[in-house]
Image (tube, rainbow, N blue to C red; front, side, top):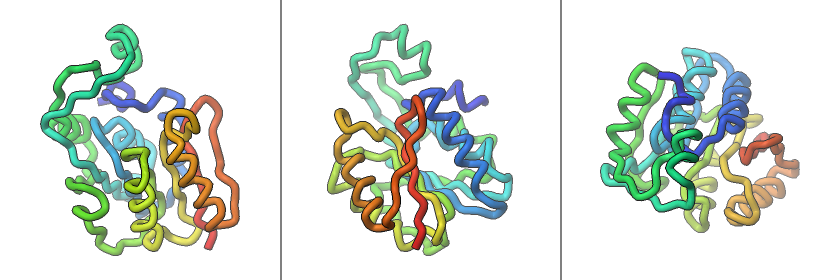
Length: 196
């Protein structure tokens, strides 16, 4: 299945950025994605990383998922967004959408308390979780020690109006690593290098 045909909230611009970031990781790399939903971004990572890379996807994957949002059915169908007020089985959807990728590993549970990491060094960490604190910052703090020096820390929905906590957390990371965030045209994805 083409990842662009999988439901999700990643725009085509976002997927283009993910495909570019995926090409930056080396052979035998480790990617961790927190917040995988239907598997759209996970399949994009898997398509563009080396086949020797392992992609660990962490999510609750609720079997009963309904989301209300303002987009029309036509907009949702055009952009592959989930329909408003429709029930989805995220666990079944994710498994089906990613079944062709042997290097995608599922870790189901509440992150980070219910999904302890196994101390493997991480080359790229991608956060697309609740977009609110304290949850998001707790996830970042938990995983920071495992991210390699010069590893990539990135995430979705950098938008000060809709998701101010995402912007706040990126600002904290800029201070921690004395660097500036990299933003991408037409996309809400952000990126910071862990430079020490």
